[in-house]
Image 1 (cartoon, rainbow, N blue to C red):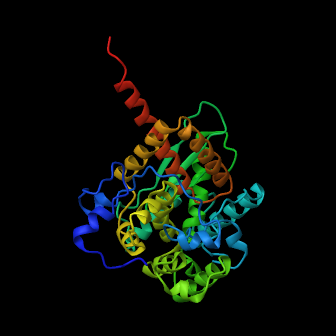
Image 2 (cartoon, rainbow, N blue to C red):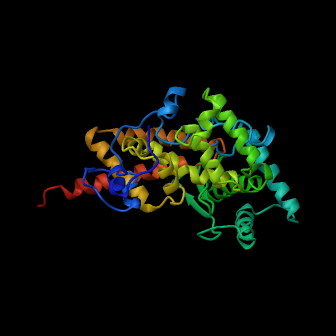
Image 3 (cartoon, helix red, strand yellow):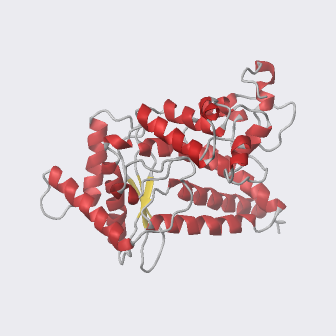
Length: 356
């Protein structure tokens, strides 16, 4: 049975999932809870049995998708719902996005064709003016995928960290930018709907769906040491926030699970409460990305081809999610971390070459 009370004298030794762990390791909680690991990655809650032994909370709710516009909002929010999704009908997706953009223009007294790039920036500037907690301001950031010929692809990152991408065939870079802005504006507007807020009723429904998905019992939901209990804890800790805000937070835990860090922390007998409490208040930053990348370098040095294989899978996931109009940050962060690992590996190989 896992104890929730941890003597300070052993805390730093226990919470060290990183490379080079030893019984004498010491340091701050930030350094000891670093995401770096070298252990294999476990499947993500593939069965009820694995739920009980899971190293972290269940997967987060699915990113905002088009079916949410037509079905019950928030329906199917169980923790098992964030698996791969095949791209929907592109024509339906385009029609829905255009409808939301036109509606946005109508309600903001816009006339004629909407400049979606400006509209998206003005939307977030308005949120900041009205008191939204945007730590890094209201700037919307665009990133073009390097290409000398169409189709062009553009990603847009919102102030909170959510990421969307152009979802249409774009013959020009300007059209790719507009396409990305459209899907981001649609999700930004839709995210303001009261049904996308985490409330007591929302939490209860989500937990019940999680229990049904994994054949769990009520005691699991009330026990924070279980996967479903941790899921409830995360929801309750973010009561009042929107689904995009919650997804931004859960991206950190998705990456920690993907990188094997949650499993490593579990093996060090680190309680879920400690992990959740620490990473719930830690933003995804360059330090965390660098540490994760270093672990993929170690895996590559142990088994050649590991990074290339994972990168190929990640690029397919990113492409499918982009064409389906889904929120992309998890997939894009994975790709960025893997590309960072490629750079680290190249630098390490260069450093070891004999000098002439």
